[in-house]
Image 1 (cartoon, rainbow, N blue to C red):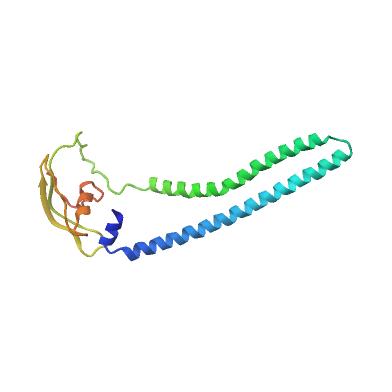
Image 2 (cartoon, helix red, strand yellow):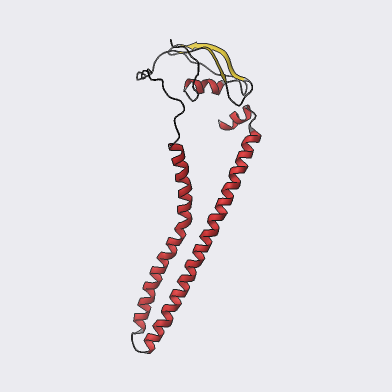
Length: 193
């Protein structure tokens, strides 16, 4: 799990600093979006109020001059209220689209990342289902940010049908070994069987 890995490599101060920095950026952007959204919503309500008032004033003048009945004015005001309510709903979508833009940008950033671990050109596809032995021979692994080896000269073989229980203290290399096995990390030097 990520928290244990962070603790195992004593990365709490760095992760906390990253979290606070990203949180401050998010807060800044959220306040900016809220400010713009409030301005847009306020203007939309102002237009709604002025438009409705203008319809009543002009309608009253037309009724006094005999150009339409009170029923016509009520019907027209209902149509105007319906149209303005739709405009108000559209103005509230601004914040929704802004948050969706952030999500989509993050998604595209992840999808556009270049794959760092690539198969060699002469790699053969795995047979389905995978069955065979797992063998680590003199495997060593160092994380770039760490000044100590996670794995050093590790050798073992697991035959088909055998079980292996990984036990050890925090930071002893259990997750690293599984990461190497599943190619979350790639070996730079290796020998083919």
